[in-house]
Image 1 (cartoon, helix red, strand yellow):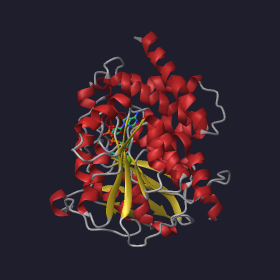
Image 2 (cartoon, helix red, strand yellow):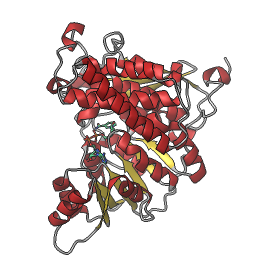
Image 3 (cartoon, protein in one colour):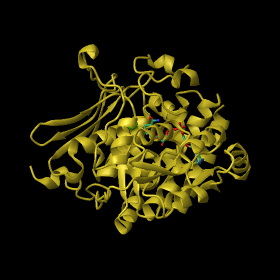
Image 4 (cartoon, protein in one colour):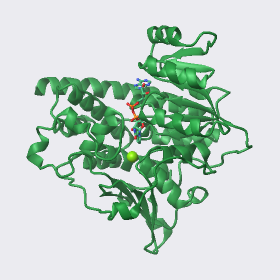
Length: 416
Ligand code: NAD
Ligand code: MG
């Protein structure tokens, strides 16, 4: 077996997506947290609060939850804040403590400016969905260390992120627990050269409907889909976990992070969410990362990289747990996983279409306007209608994203 069999011969972009050289001069790292008011953002701030000597919160961005952002701002006193629009900026200003007057930026441009600001070392990219792309690209264009939770960025623009990082020296570190697990298991500095890896195995909890019969999936409600068995997350990724689209996006994320063909990334269902993923090497070894189902572990590894800092998360008690189990995903009943693989193989614009149709369909499902099993149907319809196109820059990608969202809404309207 040669190394060329292991790596896709046509993949011009094989190897880890960025360099991994993170300077550590011992000074506190200055953090910008985008999506600060979300599940990942709140966890990131808990990590920062645990090590006030190591992290300074320089900037915080939310969208509409100004009350929580004001609380966070009062606690950390960052120099800059950002929200969705001018009305929110005004509401936020009114909630800030007397004598504290940070810059308040707004909208996509404001988030991007915050991500690229000179007084920021590490950007936590934790906005949900395609809205995270432009700020993430701005952070990479500015050569930052990016703790990337926003997997949608890689689904929309893997090549662009890789090329931009090559030009600026930006470092992308994966926050997503599976990719963070692989990153830890493989050993950071060894990552750009992956000759020993036969395949990556992403673990999936299976979501709330792991054992639900196919006929009951048709009647699944938003409340049922949001009730995740092992992870507490935002609504969009919770629905993605229920459809298995989250694992589909993560297959794409893994291929783009490591420059691997889709055939080298497997998915196995592991309901306990303790083994966070595994790498299979060419001598049959499996390197895995285990830990509690708490995103602070992955976030802290990215924020401290290459150092590891102590963390007050719960410890896994293997004896109490008793057993760890694994099973195959029910791909026929959860078509989103296969749709993601199909899009990845079809080309870079197809993954933009996949993501946009999924975001639109999830929003329609949460609004009660599309049944649960309508989500994969909407995505399949969008992929069927797409012939492929070049996606060289963020503007083209966001145009395609907007068009597919409109088309998916129209498709659902006709279907209803
Ligand atoms: P969430 O819904 O809890 O939070 C989303 C954040 O994004 C909020 O701060 C919100 O204000 C902000 N936001 C929403 N729309 C925005 C817009 N248009 N512009 C700017 N900001 C906007 O989501 P989450 O669960 O924290 O997930 C965030 C990202 O992290 C997602 O990409 C998700 O896939 C990824 N992720 C999350 C988890 C998890 O455990 N929650 C795990 C792995 C990856
Ligand atoms: Mg994940």
